[in-house]
Amino acid sequence: MFENISDKVNEALTKQQVPVPPAPAAPPAGDPPAPTVVPEPNELEIVNAELTALKAERAAERLAHESALTEQRRKTAAAEAHKPKEALNNGRQDAQLAQAVRDEGGLALWNRLTEKQKCAKLGVADTSTIQTALVEQFFGRNSSSAAVQLAASDPAQYKLLRLVSKLRG
Image (cartoon, rainbow, N blue to C red; front, side, top):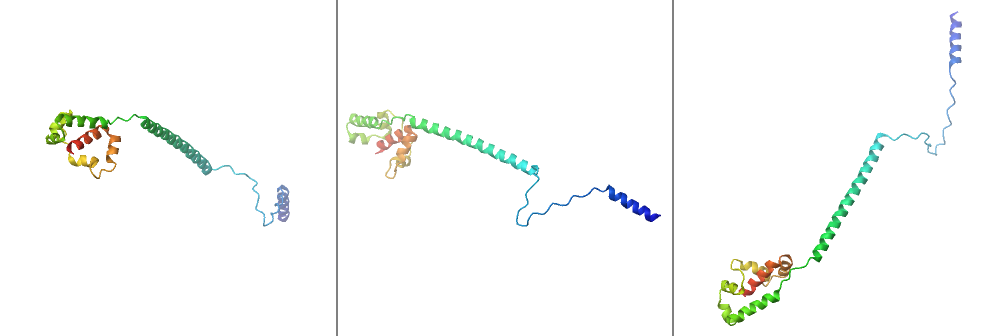
């Protein structure tokens, strides 16, 4: 009796089972397997895409900033190039000095005057406070191009130091 029950249960179970389809044949060993399912982008890929977009945006901002700076530098250079230079009037200053020497009665009498008296005759402020080393730095034997650079950067100082150099001989 129990043997029949077991057989009946086994029969019922086999009838209820769904047949399993046979497994697909494996591809040959030399060919790579073809992907059949396209995976959805994971979180890492999304973050990498955002990072790439941010880098591109930052590069564009940097390029715009550099372009603006370059344009500003160009405008500044153009403005400096077109800026009128102050006339040094070295010739006029030399002519005034020569006239003062003639008015005094010649170079011999001119050289007897003190520096303060010479400045008064030329109508300039007293130059005795200007150090001789500073004058020699720009107009001395080893001055090189220092005077030219001073004339370009500070014409008023150049005029004064040149006059002092001429007064002190």
